[in-house]
Length: 370
Image 1 (cartoon, helix red, strand yellow):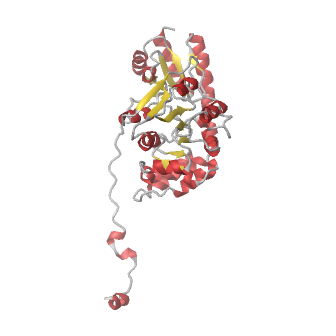
Image 2 (cartoon, helix red, strand yellow):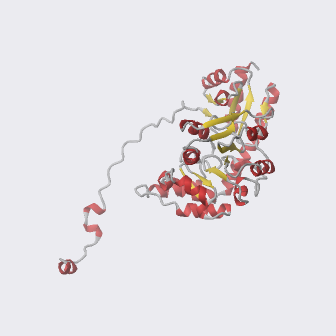
Image 3 (cartoon, rainbow, N blue to C red):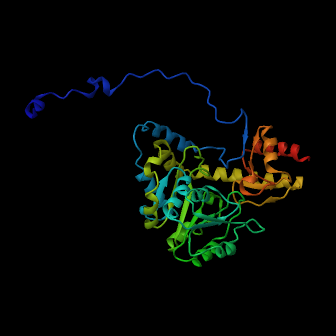
């Protein structure tokens, strides 16, 4: 057989019909239901209205051609490690930062133990911990809507294994200074992991060298999660990553999707996004202008609000937020109700394009009687 095979001429690949299958006709383009009415003003999910950068879109189009292959995100890991000045074994990329919010309790709370966090904060990680029957202590924010770090510390017991902080916080938009967080971490027992969700860290202009990643480099037992959903406009594509000591990353890997949670298109788009600082700055400017507009409008309406460092803010509308949300939705304006975070008279509103912000204010005026 060997000699027979050696004597057979190798035909060009094009001679085999399976190598180049006939192109099938594309189905007619149908209307896609994106889950909202036509012309909806979507200010309820902290999305970047610009969407991905043009460079990222071009890269994702190339990635679609590799959609039949499983992703090997080695290059992305290297780029993220270089971007943050850490080693590649300290980076784990995944399906949005949500992947790490869900698997961290499985990695560190599955055998019992306690989680301490704030009451008015992002709910995915504490919700997942409760599924595992871990005890979750939720401490109310202080009167200025900041984490009450002293009360969080008082809530610790020998069974506490993890503390979850969102900085800047979602939904309040408030942020703790680096020195406060560092002092807090330094005061904790070495057995406790502090998970810092930094989904909105890009919006802190003075953050360089003063964030959770700095604490990791300084030896603190910290996990930081980041996302491409917000400033890079890739919310619907699902890409995020965690940074921690290699020993912690190893524990997280055991419960994550690994590269299988990253599709080829967003892998390419994520790489391109890291290089497009112009797009990032454009969005930041939009947020700055939108924030100033909302502040002025809320002041004129006599509505209290929480000053924000993020692309969203909370305003007190002096009625049940679930009622306000329904009334605004009837006008095709969508925002989040504060009841989702035990803040029943507040609305969380994302800054959008100027015309969207104006439509939101016009609708809000009609329901608060201004």
